[in-house]
Length: 387
Image 1: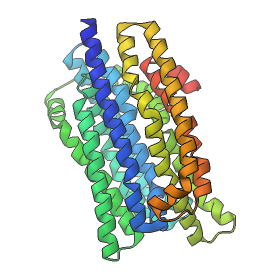
Image 2: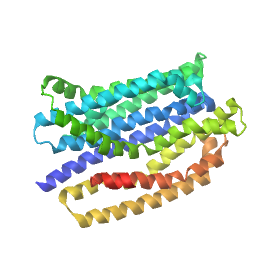
Image 3: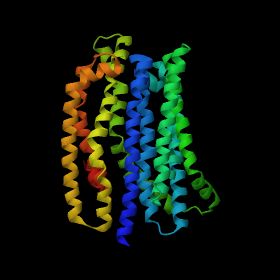
Image 4: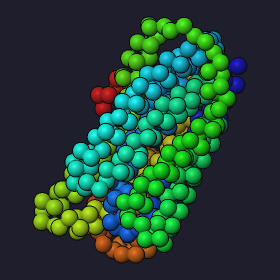
């Protein structure tokens, strides 16, 4: 019975790992044709707002769903599982409304802080996504807690494919019809909303069941759910989105720093767009450097279920060795090939030195993400926070 449970968990974790890797590859590759269509300045416009989208997706895909799945898995009856899901959905929906209101109503102020007032409409556009994130978080978390991994995996892949198709079509259509780069950016982020709606289609039966069920409001359950989301859930979100948070810092500081250094606004935007090319290489580098190590993470979960401490420790050592050596190899390779890769993908060698230096992030980010995954597999949130 124990082996059957372990194999079932292993299969589900493997499914999510593969879906996550494919999603990351798609998320990295589409930037190349998009940048070639809209140029450095168009890419700068998109990348300025991308972290706001990225945070939403981190919350809705790898942040809260992980925590919610563990809460659901602990409950013994379907009634309690649905009661927990209802409580979590209400809390997260209030959170989503709050974030939406701040982004939408303060879009002009946020755009000004980023140093570009024309970004206001893009911020308003992406703010609507935060009304859908609670639905995705709870639906994915509930299904994962029930060991139903396929809906999450398929929803993730469909969401990415729909979003990427709309981004490329918006760029092609916009360039052909003389749209402004800001308008193209707005339609590109509209793709994220359409993608999220398509992802929700995979959870129609879950929402129907939740609507049919009737539960009395339990204040204790609500308070415990809120505490968990603000502690364990938030910690998972912060570490899962560490690269996106660094990009958000760049959105508020890099352009202004370039202007302070004496560059004109147009040159600063162009240089920011060039530097943002590094995100494509970083994501691809991290996918390559962590793919082999993260593919072994489901084995850790199996070891935990079987309570095999020796194999657990052996697998951790193996995963670390693979991650470190792969990260170093990929980083060195990208640095050596950067001028050629930059020219081949983005039609110029501009910014190759700065992009090469940023590739060192792969080593440290890879280890941080791996640490986060391992500590999650042991439910050791205190160490995650201290690290």
